[in-house]
Image 1 (spheres, rainbow, N blue to C red):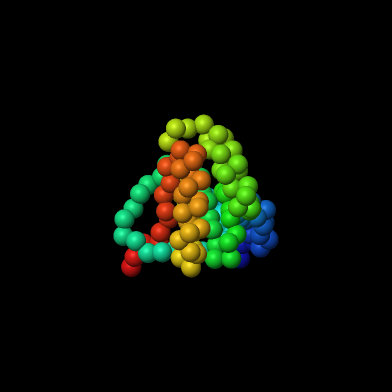
Image 2 (cartoon, rainbow, N blue to C red; image 1 turned 135 degrees about the vertical axis):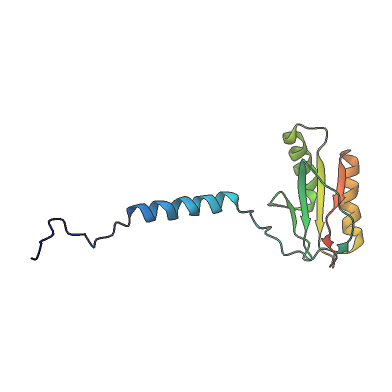
Length: 131
């Protein structure tokens, strides 16, 4: 005796839940990703490590482009921009992390260190870990 099935399985697939999951994953990765530095820097090698909790980043590329926290500035405006960023941080433990390309002359690095000395802020030279 042959029985008929009353309920047939539907072959349709709903994509709504899959797109929701994809958008949630996309938002998660965008929020958790680190924004890349706009300057292409080749840092010098070193073995030491110094943690900086509240830091402001100052970058100098080999074509002498200055950046303070991903904002391009002229050298003449570097001191005022840096002092404004220090004032915004509202902390006594603010450090400035110098990211200077290894092809830049030492004179330019000393000029930035002198600005930090005038502003009475501690400065750290960023390096690439040795392999």
